[in-house]
Picture 1 (cartoon, rainbow, N blue to C red):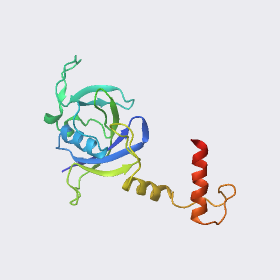
Picture 2: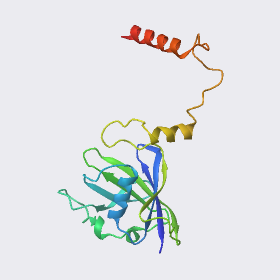
Picture 3: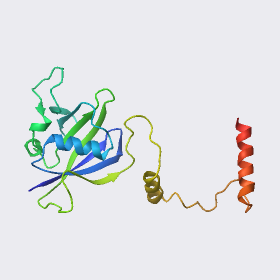
Picture 4: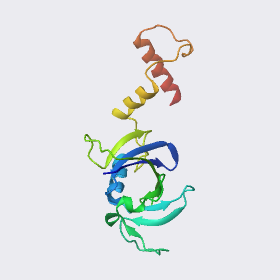
Length: 188
């Protein structure tokens, strides 16, 4: 059974992407669900895919449900459309739009086709994560695992030699906290 690996770019920043793997027999509904899981979005909103070309132009629509709008061509439904039926190119592209109010847009590109399934994975699966996903509802702080991931990736825990604060000395922690408190008082 063929395994399709898609790279799902956040449209506004192509350094943020998720690689997802699906069986070619799975539906666009399952692709939709794994994209939401990969970006930590809920599934409360409307969504649609558009078949696309190399210029990221929107083509035939594959939608979660038929929405109350005009269509140039009757849309396909995610649940009833197997992914293999819409793959016409070895680098097939789709545009995925989620939450029509916020208009989250993702560029979905087929990057690999494999004949071998990974027995350790349950498909569909997120197989690679790059960059910090945008927060679906406002700002997301760097807390816990995400901060640790950033520290490890960019080595934020090590200081840069040769740079320090003016007047920095090897004083005790008490002196530093007093200086910090004094600076805060000046700001207020």
